Image (cartoon, rainbow, N blue to C red; front, side):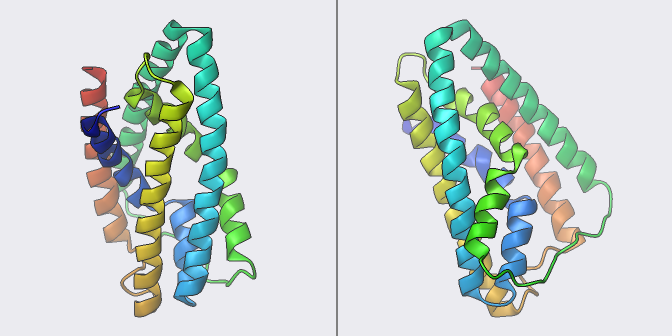
Length: 203
């Protein structure tokens, strides 16, 4: 994998990380009571993504070994899924809604964060949709999947940790996810994903 491909991968997943979802909302809800709780929740979410990484890495390796044609079909299905995600984000950005944010402090935020990530089917689908776009047929599939997963998890750790610290420092005012901010994030992210899908489809 080239540096350019890794950079493009990072640019593709950052919007997905920044869009409010179950993981982000849980982390913010815990960080309101203190940065430590938010960081523990972040660590749990990232640990949950490690499980996804292992499953996807070995799964993609098996697909490549079984049939390169099937892998190519999976890649195009991933492009279609990116377009679907983009359309959903753009549609959501056009509708005002109240984002529910539970404020109850969890006794073990690491464990809850871990379970939140592991049992989030959207997270697994994103892995299967995005990783094949940046993998080369002539290189070990599992190794490539691990590298890409490490980048994704690392970005999650950095972004969610920063969000936890900011939320704790401001009492949730700056870290809170207002409806206007949500709509802006979803609109921008949807546009970025459409551009990414078009770029990947032209490869």
